[in-house]
Image 1 (cartoon, rainbow, N blue to C red):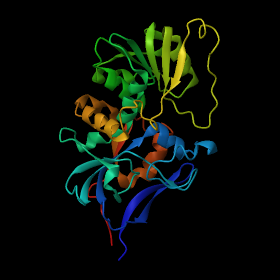
Image 2: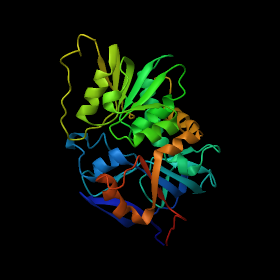
Image 3: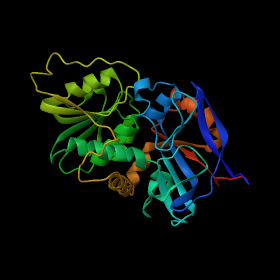
Image 4: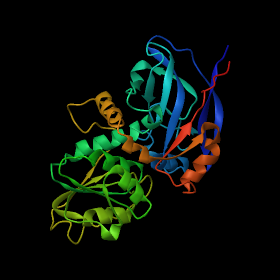
Length: 325
């Protein structure tokens, strides 16, 4: 008898639907997970939603358990928390880089145990906090550094949260949206609009995915300062201000991308474990700015994409994760 689960698929720009998908029986070394929550990573997922992935980046942008090919139809996502119902880890709460789906079967090695101190509803942030951990590893800040994070979206705010307790550091979140000040306050870092940001920075993380944001990031640097660029621009061409003071101040722009671990002495699994351990801190709740039922995703995703729902991480709630036979 065929078992099925429900999954969210993107069909074409601006459209999505919940489909029934075949749910295989778990084999040796596999687990079956009933989803409790998933998260919409607004920047990347809405880029996919509008069909903005460049053709030459199709392979790079594939999610670990993606089905279909860019641009559409595609089942895409990577922030999933559920409870194991079949397999060696039965009864344990786990995080997996899996799309929005009520149940799924994956190798046991593809899930990470959520620590008891981390609520399942907060654990959906693990994938983005992992990106933040990797960015900090790439940047290697020093005690007492003056640091700005330009772009108070999900990634930028996660970086600010990770750095909030860094010894002796001055950390300021910079965003053009005054509403982000409340998020910064909850995270325990400073806040400024772009025109009022503190300059003389040793290190700036850029995560706004805008030309003005990158210009702001460069302008905040002290001599020998570095920008860690996390923005994903998709198919857009941007201008970088490499004239004026860029050469005289000996500035650096360095990319950071979660596909490569930022430390040679750490594995992907160890990086994810660090991210989940950090999520024991309830300050991270500030990054979850709304929630909806799984069944409402076809209506919710377009509103997230066009800004109708202002969000950092939008959590999707699954109830009982129904499976049919």
